[in-house]
Length: 262
Image 1: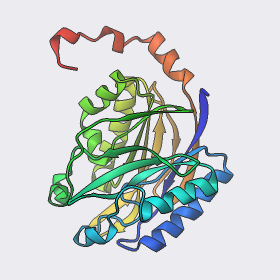
Image 2: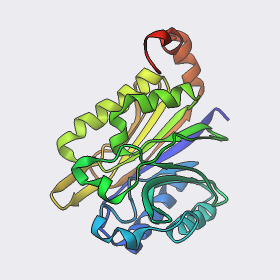
Image 3: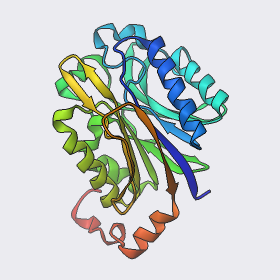
Image 4: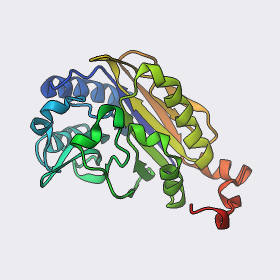
């Protein structure tokens, strides 16, 4: 299937109030489904926000707690659901992105590999150690999370592994939002694949989050975008665009591999 519809969902995350955030997400997921979405992407830590002092209360092993609840929502709506939550594995906690399929099963997990120093994420989370992909009916999908966007090596690694769509949940503040929009386009253009980034909106502590969630095509064009308010937008993804762009400008084929590691 070369075409599918991806829904971007951005909303104001109520810090630490999981039930309220899940209820809001459910309503917006249903709205995306009504608009024809086959898959939806939610922001980083969408169910609890950066409630790091109470992090243990929000952490569950994969398949349990909130992860099971998201699986139930995916099965009820018949959608793929992606987003970032907090996972517990033994005595370690991870900022982890998951992709549930329409049967409610987790088919892809990715732990944030670059932990954001300004939020002291390294104090709370263990970093991820792998860059997995999954083959879906809608192409090969991979994750990055927020601060990861600043590391082009990660995105080039995905391109060389055959990724076609990168999903990026984020909590990106207003004072650096130009970087978010610029880097989403740069990562798409330099790797000639689709990049979808979802940012939250609202105010949390001293930070204001302006949304600006968007899907960028392999040629760098923004094909769907939200402003600074809560909402849903649905983009049609056509994987045939990747082939066309790479044939017209074969950048990846002209890499001087002997000069650098990637």
